[in-house]
Amino acid sequence: MSPQSAAPERAQPRPGPSYKWWLVGMLWLICFFNYADRQAIFSVFKLLEKEFGFNKTELGWIGAAFMWVYAITAPFAGQVGDRLHRKSVILAGLYVWSLVTGFTAACSSGWQFMLVRGAEGLGETFYFPASMSMISDYHTRRTRSRAMGLHQTSVYAGTIGGSAIAGWIGESLGWRAPFLLFGGLGVLLGFLLTAFVREPARNEAERMEAGRADARALRPPGPLHEFLGFMLRTPTLCALMLAFLGANSVAGVFLAWMPTFLNEKFRLSLTVAGVGAVAFLQIASMVGALFGGYLADRLRPRWAGGRVLVQAMAMLLAAPFIFLCGATLDLMTLTVAMTCFGFFKGMYDANIWAAMYDVVPPERRATTLGIGNLLGWLGAGCAAPALGRAVDNGISMSAAISSTAVIYLASASLLLLAGAVLLPRDLRRLGDAPAR
Image (cartoon, helix red, strand yellow):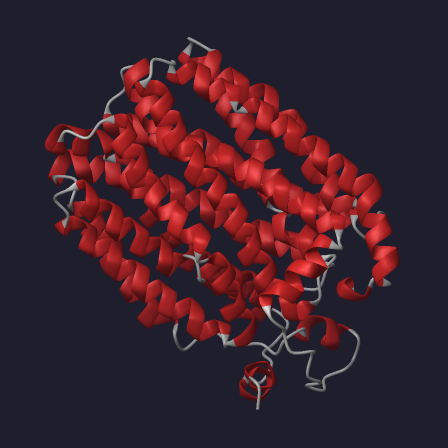
């Protein structure tokens, strides 16, 4: 019996209609720690610099170690999510990355920080392919963007929580304390949610919507090279992947360097810089994700490229505010720019995976996300140390941050092409089969 065919047999009885939203809520809590754990390190960069004498390049590589391992192992994580039970994959990942987060407190050299950050990336990379595949099996394309947009708000909440709590506790109790706190709470959450997360059958939402409760097996996922061939024959998917590479490269710069940028340029304390670097941007992203998910779900039944065009509009409108974030000398103007950038970023983020799922079959959804994470986090893993190196070589951090607006403009152009031209063509070629 193949792993794929085993999944529907072990799926638990289908719960009531409201469970699909309770499931999003439980995954929201797990994803909160997924992001809080990875973000905490950036808020204590100045403390690590002071205690261990790291320069900006070394700090950039410590931050990038997570991103590189997360990216390189993402295709494997996608294959696992398409073959094994996603509940087990999600909870095992939570335990692993929480324990590794706790071990961060024992580090005392650069290579040790890079080692634990890489191990944390290995644990966390399994979460998103499995969780987004699971959500898509509870939510059809009628509610998929809203569900994923709601889940996406946990990314922003975790980023805020990781930055603010790590900065505050780090200044008060030392840089080791926040890692012990987050690691312990993550393990506890895993124990609490074990009894409540239910593994759905593959493609369950669409089958139930169509009135087919049978557990008809989907085509087992083939080797990775077969999916890569499908992707190369689907221009829409290629365009969406490249746009995500660009978007996540910019996000990597902001996540890694904004606390340091605020501390050095505006002389804010570590606590205030840690909160300010993420709070306005991420809270606005929460609102943008909810709005973007709602708007895309309303447009998609009327317009095949609706989700993608929402993303394109969001990136186009965000680009000027990215430039302003680096260029302004006024703290209030920076706050407004970060808030506007965050809102449009959230609109884009809400539809990243829902848009891709419009052109891929259900049995390859986790693999799709794995490949997307490979590209997106390789971009972030290159961008974060590249900015640190540029600053060490004499380029101002302000100019480096402003220059990333060009990446958003290029990505928006790709999405406009995909939504208006490529996606309708691909759906006609595929007979709209993946979306049904």
